Structure formats: C-alpha cells, structure tokens
Length: 256
Image (cartoon, rainbow, N blue to C red):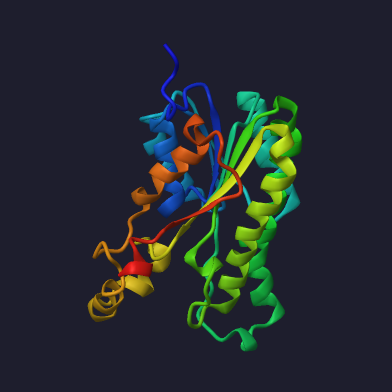
C-alpha cells in the first residue's frame, strides 16, 4: 500500500530558528510526521530544550548551535547535517529577527543589516548551500520559508522588518522558478500575529489584544502549533504539484 501522502517517514528535515516559538513547534511537528530532524539556532539553551522535545518524537535528532548570519555558520549547518544523515530533503527557514519598533526613515545601516542578515541574507544563502550540496544531487527537495503578512502590507513602526519579509516572498518565487527543473519545490507560509516570546509586546496588553482580535475572524491570535500543518503539507507528497506559493495563515484577518 502506498505511503500516506502526509507522511515524512525516511525524510531528513533541517529547521532554523528552532530554539523557540514557531521553529520549535515546526521541528516537533516534522518529527511527529516521521522525519529525522536537524535543529539549529544561535540560542544554545533554547536549542537544547527543543532537542529534548523533538527526541521524544523523532527517530534521530541533530542539534547545531550556529550563527545563520555568517557563511561559516551556514556551511557548518549543512556539512554537519550531511555528515549525520547523508541527505537533506526538507529545509524550513524559520529563523527571524523582529524589528525594534521605529520609523523606517530613522533606520541606520546597523539596524538594517541586523534584520537583513538573518531574515533575508541568511535565509537565501543557507537555501543555496542546501540546494547545491544536497537537493540538486538527489534531484529532490522542499524548501519552506517563513514569510509574513508583513510581506504584503506595511505594518506600523516595523518598516524594515516588512521590507525583509517582502524579500522572503520574492525569494520564494525566484527560487521556485529556478529550481523546479531539479525537482525542488519552494513555498512559504505567512502568519500574522503568533503568540511567542518574540511578539509578547504585541499581545500581552489585554486592551491592545482586544482591539486586534476585532479584525480576526477566528477570534484569537495564532499559536506556534497553528503553523505546523501547513509546513507538513508543503514538505510532503500532498503538495507535490505546488511550488512558488505563499500561504497566508492569519485567522481570517481579511474577512474579520
């Protein structure tokens, strides 16, 4: 009997930004679906905690503390994953840096670089390394990027973050176009507000949260686990004819 289309048995997944929040939930979800998982983050303590959780579900887990903003960090992530597992079938670019609130016109180069080096440059060049070293040789792969509703609309006082996420949406389409001939699919998910430590400023005030909820049809903000199903869909055979897409996961803000 054919393997279920959502199963990731025998697959190897690499998840960045896995020390907490969305990356943590995605790593756990991929392991539950059957994948062997590499988790990586610059947060040494957080990555150890994620490893404990993922080990309860995965057949094998590799954790790597690395700085995604450097070429040495990116190359080490790929090399150690291939040494351990011999292949990379799924890459989830979940690592991201939030913008310290402020006007775009007041941004200096240091602030710009801090955002872009993780959200866009790190994502792009890690993807290229994985593609060249693993996915093209095996003629197979699925890359899932973490975009945002900020990829499509400016958010107040978060302009540079929005620019970085707009870049993620376009990188998704560009790589999908160029890599399709190698059997590699590239898609993205785009959440709105997800309840994580990183976004605590946006949901911790009850009155502010009450106003935000008025625009959300489902009447609640997302939790990291809400992202898992879409990632498994893009990672699995269920989406074998889907590439270059960015899926909004926003609770129905547009119809709220």
